[in-house]
Image (cartoon, rainbow over all chains, first blue to last red):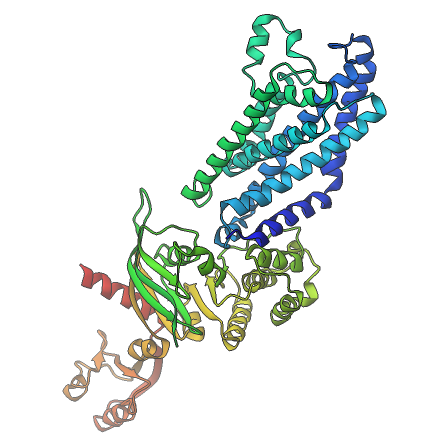
Length: 254
Length: 312
């Protein structure tokens, strides 16, 4: 029997912390994304020709949303579980009648909610700068939810693994951000020379951005089914890893 | 009284480490207060951690309220509250919110009336809206107790509740435990301080190197080991202990200037009056008399040493 009260308690606790630091949580990522719109959309975008018939300013909207979702999902989730480890309050989660499913659902659910909320604010903001049409709203939301969930799970693993703040930040900074930039956030993979296009297609983030961009414009670098498969595979692998960590107590009960 | 905690042949072997617990068995009744005594690394915290679910045992079983902690862990953990040794609180959270959060973790429905009762009993109600970082050390400890009691547990574990605190705070904690005793909460506490165990516990367990050396009612333990020593300083040194005194176990110091006598304060006749009368009869003049309670520290050390010698 799942302890729903524990899921609710952790979720509410995390969301309360999010709204307590609202400027840091919402204003900061929104502001930095607005700057992307101003620089790449309005200033430089006007001088760049349309990408596959889509104005450059609009073309980068899905990429910017994905950039934010990936960064926010990973950092919120990683910090969420790392902070109790750092402060010592992790014992509360481990002695409570709550298993890995409840603890993960609480933290990951909150982290995904935060990043989805920020992504939607960014989408609303983009309407002020560029004309954006969403071709497949349902799939746009589906990709948004699945990607936020998948990368919140990844962040949760990073938070469980991290032994210090440096480790906590190194994966988002050194791995996630480069993968997003090289995954077609600001360009289409088809714009690359054939060799680099092949290399780019080895980047899993490209599949997410491609699927998300398809939901906006009906255009994709890779088949949409592959994008769904990539995010589904990532969710399964992450859930398996988290279950293993809780079962063995690795970095948790040491 | 029925047993609320049953520990049966419990063992824990850490990888690349010594055996932290070695075949420990014990039973604790509902409403009891039990103190587990032992030096650092004795296995006290490991024992508590296993019962609470923080550490996985390598052998043996534990049942809490009849629920096995591994097969029926959710039901077992609902009955337990844990106050850790370290003060671990989220610094920016308010007292009431952090207590509400813990109650939620246990799946208990919101009940602010109950939480108010808990906070009032711990003199924390006036601080309910204060961030935990603003509280004194004593208040933080009480917040940890409030969190542990937030879901109305049947058993409360206090892991060294007074470690590193001053005397006033220690007394304050004793009062809190006394209040909990009156409320009928079963309490298992670990401590270095034998005085603390004597003050609070119904039974005392002594644990060392992972072995439970003994577990006895506090009064019985104190009766067995709580002796007093009488030292009599003499005006003139004696060349040897008079035979009639030596027969009664009285000893003469090496310099011949004092006599020593061990007695039990609980016995009907301590023999002191008889001894003083004998000294007067023998013409031995007394300069001074002093008594010393054999400290619980000495009791503990003698226990640990004796058992170690027996094992050898």
